[in-house]
Image (cartoon, rainbow, N blue to C red):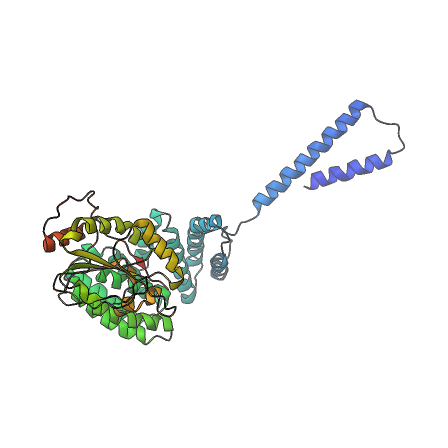
Length: 420
């Protein structure tokens, strides 16, 4: 840059001093132009090189623990304004925070600094894990490295992450291990602040228990939810307190097995729904919404079984958790998909969506949620989705006259969760 600047100054000075001299030859003029272009290119390259040398936001600086904490806080303050920036954060934040964490730990940090850095690194790895499967292994390795830490609060972080891993592997856990996970989860609430992460983890375990196909999990679910409801209802956050009340409905639903269910409300055309008229039929009560991906994925299975068993006494009652403002959209959806069964829909702005009275009464926190009722009006299944629906209908109504067109794949079925 300096050389180019000097060259520009000398060129200007010479041309000024020699202004009264005779005009230069064409060759000399051409040579001067070439020199000028070369100087300009040199200046551009130097500028580019200088710009590239500048440290970016993810470049870890030198410094002590305080400097590393300040750097991590700057990274966490970066707010994306586009999808590209979101991806950049997901890719670059974890390596940068991890590198800063290593420097921090090598510079004799205070316990408070260690705890803050641990939380930040864990959060960054969790974000990265959404697009990088290797980050999941890094989380496990990181948590393992913290098990001998004497810093106050770290043991609770380790416990919380261990619980998360066990929840993710719930189906393979023996009964004793499941009981310990529940005990650890409930015990954790007495040690840590009831924040979003803790609430989401507790809800994750609740939904694992709620939708578990293992009948032995049902008493575990009701016991856990009863205790969790009491903890949540004491929260100063009205949203968390409301979740506690929702758990009461979930317990009510889980206790439906072998017992009658009551369905009330209005149909989407405004008429009153008559549950008593379904006595003697096998009925699938289906909580769903048009915006729910897993619901739409399950819909062909319900339609197929409806066609095969409707003449034998099978019916479906849909309870839409769409917002009251989306009534026309729901009606168009039903028309386009040629849905033949009745749909309950609330047009009350105060009691719509997840607040649909029947959804609240039975603690619906994830959809699709399906409840299968037999000819006597008693609930016989809380998980009749995918292949399970056809099997249950065959038990209750015998073999269908026509074979199923496409056997649904047996796998753990997803749900759309209420995270509001």
